[in-house]
Image (cartoon, rainbow, N blue to C red):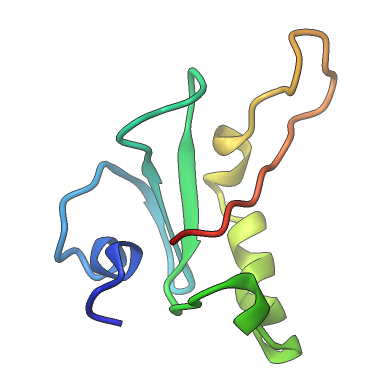
Length: 92
């Protein structure tokens, strides 16, 4: 989708500090981080919303979560949290 900022980043038509990429996903540093480490991991396939996904898209979405960048993209919810947390956010 040509107007999607995430598609432009994935296609390298828009600059971003990419920390990891593979055939199904791209991970890059957020330009306005809300945590000490704030990495966005996005699928290369365009989805207008999570509601647009189908069962056949599961491998693409799982690949994003299992990306090599995912452990660096996680941050504990509290200073005492023992496990990292993921937050999914639907873009505009």
